[in-house]
Image 1: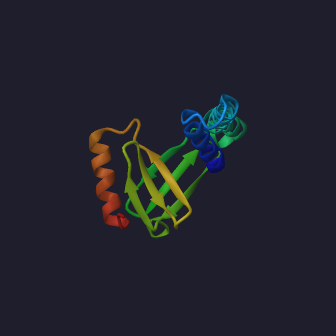
Image 2: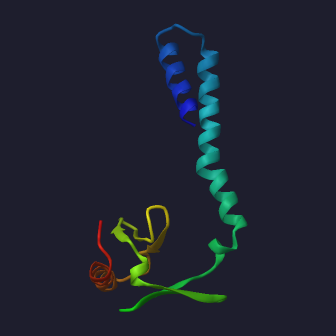
Image 3: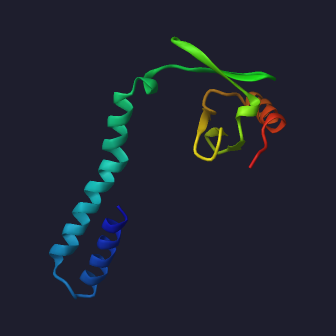
Length: 129
């Protein structure tokens, strides 16, 4: 992907400086557009439609001892000590198990009081980074 972007930029610079004909520039542009469409739309659509996990409905419960995730097939519990760190983005709470494993809790559907209470609980139980 990086090479395609570099090729497209170099082709654009050469085209506008009249060092190459329009064909390499158009080729780079077409490859770039096809790659971006596949990365932004085709791949996510295929991944999300094939996996049953993305179609399930989940409920998450936070209490003073554990974080419990429920769905129609069962549940899983994590003690607070399982989480290494957390941070908040505009739409999610990110709970990290380690540097590469994390769990995302969407803020959608939470009231401001619930978000504030969850921030307090997360600050109390997990180190914020």
